Length: 196
Image 1 (cartoon, helix red, strand yellow):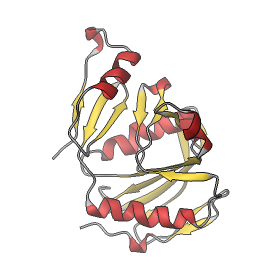
Image 2 (cartoon, rainbow, N blue to C red; image 1 turned 90 degrees about the vertical axis):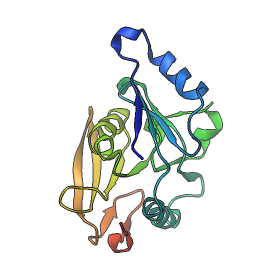
Image 3 (cartoon, rainbow, N blue to C red; image 1 turned 90 degrees about the horizontal axis):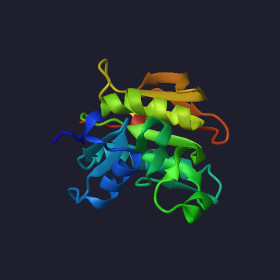
Image 4 (cartoon, one colour; image 1 turned 60 degrees about the vertical axis):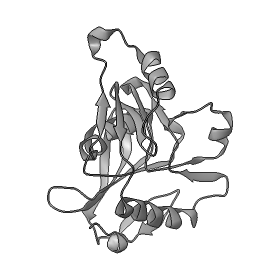
């Protein structure tokens, strides 16, 4: 199953508020992830077991180093209106307080770290569109776990956002350790990541 996009097109008169309303009010297939990426509503099928296992491995490790006042969220929408986006990162690490004041989607910039794990259907968005949005929103760290990279599975840590561009802090293949800097100061062992 591939990702489905709903593009109202520039001449149909849909604005940002219309896209948000469509995303919130329409009935979407159960279990699917519904995002707005560069002004296009995107519906992705549920994640694979490999994808979920990688997210679980990272989440378990992060819980050992984050303060109790932070949470790790897998279904939290983060708003990037400057790039016409509402993304749902595979993992978003942010203060729990941010959820207490938000109606639904939280400004992406409150996240300390976002993690995206590519699926066959969304790899391009996770490599290009989302990093630009996260950088523009000021998310300090973006971890891309790219199981579908052309040369084999890779892990890339981005940081130091300027405008809509990140600097690559570390890049390697599955099996290479990845060190998350402060405030995490932890090494992710990517040897445990499996892709069937």
